[in-house]
Length: 184
Figure 1: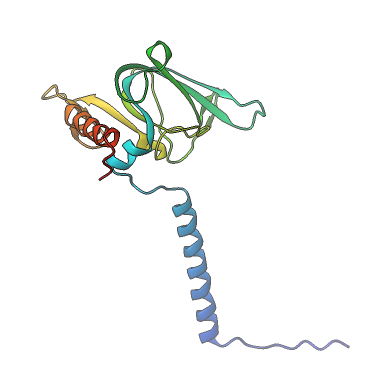
Figure 2 (figure 1 turned 135 degrees about the horizontal axis):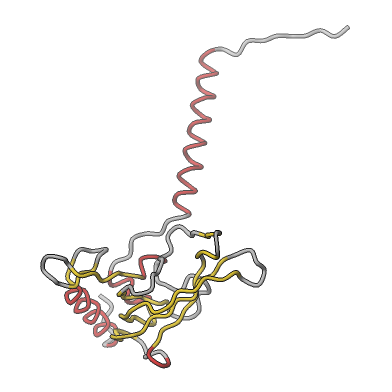
């Protein structure tokens, strides 16, 4: 004959266990959130890490499945109007591929990566060396969008709320210091 032994867990122990479980769950959420984000980069950090910085208009953004049919990649083409750093790409068109996009009804969104639309006026900071599928410095931070203020007509850097000319002067100044060997 089997004997069933019952025992009671004191209320204080149950509360302690529940608190420990909540702390563990919150730690996991914080770890996942941290892992999927990047620190905010300064203009200097963006500029120094970039091998190429260009301004231009997005002329094409085509998404396609990779060869394993398990990821979507998007090839972006930018017609360069202003080279701020690096060498002019062949034909004056910068082409790069990044992770994410949409093919038919299936979309693959990658948190933190920039998205591109044909006709957008952008400045992009492209990494030194090869960075397959995440070519922009600081992921989405490596793209700034230029818009025209409806009231003043001034071209603005949308993400920063400053005039485009001011931003370009700042980046050009950083590039000049970098080329002169000054890394303040």
